Image 1: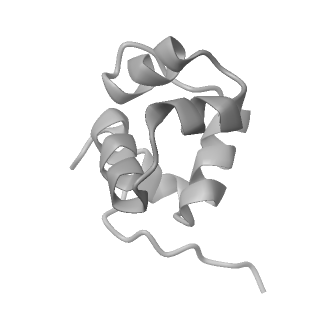
Image 2 (image 1 turned 180 degrees about the vertical axis):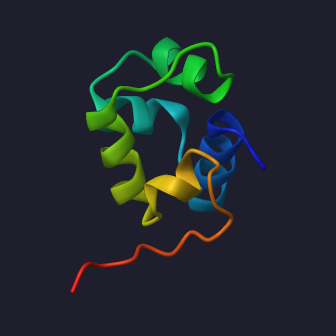
Amino acid sequence: MIDLGARLKLLRKEKDVMQKEIAQLLDVSIRSYQYYESNKLEPNLVNLVKLADYFGVSLDYLVGRSDDPTVHKNK
């Protein structure tokens, strides 16, 4: 399965946004976000949730545990 960094890069490119924009959303430096994409640093749980919400994908998809991006809502 694909890793977090590769998934972030793929989703960002699909959405056609720059690393700087995602860094601002997360309130982190651009370098920190670049480290997320290169797997040198992992985002905290709060930022993982923000990323999943921003890209409209499940956390499992984002972190590479699933290839299904669908967000499953609790009933």
